[in-house]
Length: 264
Image (cartoon, rainbow, N blue to C red; front, side):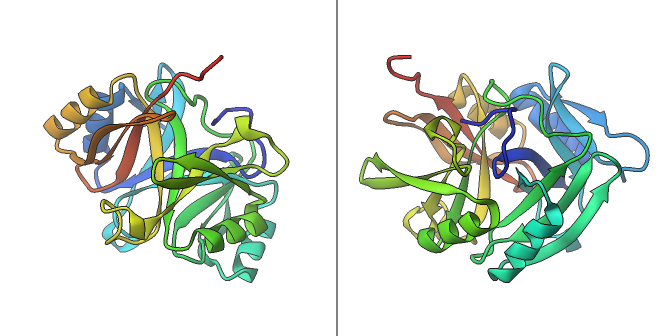
């Protein structure tokens, strides 16, 4: 699962682009208890969502011309420029060329061959988020894509990912983990977009999952705060209880109450 013991290719940052930071803060504070803190001068209004003083995610105000409100998942790289060059060579798209974020790190925004947008983060002073897996923090990520094999091949070349298939009700599920790591480092999955009624009409995208002890209660609060429940809570055998939502501006995210590990 996700960890703050970051390895190359694994998620190490996530941020929200939103037209209204104040309202977004009110929404996510109501769901997860997050507090907003400014990243300081010279950051263009960028800030952090924090849980008990530990950074969960970043947040920034984005104008309409930068695209719809969305969560962006970032993956660790040792060399943002080299990774960007590889992505371009295997027919990915570069939305934002590598740039330094003060002395915190170096980043770029890319899309895979199917159009799924993601970020890469080369750590400087900031390694990444400071908490994962706990209630209110990132616990899993999924790519909804129309071509699982093409996506797996792309990310293997760009970020070194390895994939494995897990039996799932009605079929199988493709898990991903960093190169050379075991199943304990699995951090996400690849999902066929066209086979999911909730997602089939949309474009490929990365979906972040936040852990919670009570997905049903969080969904109820989200509705009260102006969000949308896109997929009502349901139980998945050997996985846990999941739900999919959108915040008041349409940024999509999901919830997961993980099933306790057997024999742990």
